Image 1 (tube, rainbow, N blue to C red):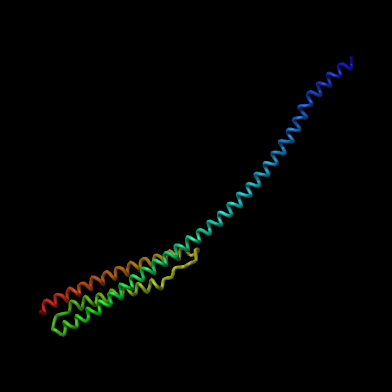
Image 2: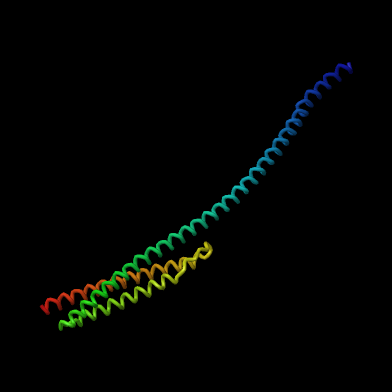
Length: 192
């Protein structure tokens, strides 16, 4: 009878121990998978850090390229503006020489050229102002260093204000030259 009671007891112990032993193997598998997943997470975090570093490097390069491009555009604009202003100054100087020859012609004919001479003197002063502004623009350099953005911005503002002042001086010169021509026309009508 003892054998009969021992056998069911053994069966009971084995019945309960089987799932417990199985749980241990499942736990071991889960721990292995968890460790494997943690390794993958660490690898992915390392990859993300590398990608961020590359992105920051590329962003820095793009920023430098953008600064270089802006600097080149500003230089080109300054060159074009200088070329246009210098051509305008040259045209006005030719016009001044023609007006001066007309003034001399009317003076020898006995005409009153005081108003034309005054307007011409003002125009010459305006052209001298424009030349001074152009010299300031030419002397102002545009830094190519991307880190010198505050200096670049200040220089761009200087160029901008000087160009505006040169434009205004040339506009005044044009108006004074027109007044001189109109005064000469009046003198021509009066001497006929």
